[in-house]
Image (cartoon, rainbow, N blue to C red; front, side, top):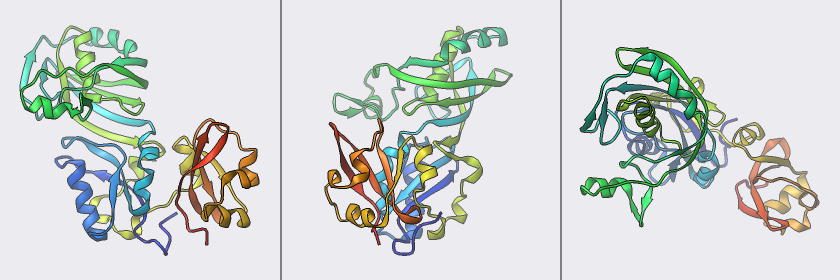
Length: 299
């Protein structure tokens, strides 16, 4: 489903970001095609050396970024064993070298990285340390050691291993750094490592097969939230009748709408009107429901 005619520049697009450009600059080039007055955002940064799926949001849909960003991600990556850079990618300076491990040694350590693990983000990352981005401290020459936090690796498969380069496929939770995964896998098998290539293959329910090339992007590329997309993002779904649709869009307290009196869900819920018109999202507030925001017009 594409963006509605009343808001032609409000929606999201599943883009195939090319390598060699930051997510911010890439998003800016898309925004200029829609008009300088259109707000824009994205659901999960891709480093400049990386490519693949980048979900970009425009207009009112920028308010949905947290929900899109919270979905799991999939990647295909190449790890260069025997060398580590300060950024853990091809763009950094070499800080350590070590012998290249054997295939047997590499395969032996992979099981320990499946499931929920503790992972320290890279020094060159956007995590905050005492109110400052880690990469800002690293660029000043400070010793940056971000704290480890739990992440979940749902799948980790070795696709090939040739000439010290391991190709892997990863499915993981929000907040997982594939650069850190490359570093830690290499250390576990007695070596050093960094990424040499990275491609995001999916973000939540959106795959690389449906991603749009920048040259093909325009207002007609924008989609709106559907019940299927909402489910894929891990949201609950509820559909209102016409009378409740109008009341919801006008901000009537949710306890006065019958649908929400009996609604049970442990996650935020995407709300739709007739013909799957996206209206907004609600979330729990104690024992009742509250508006996260209202998205649709209700007309």
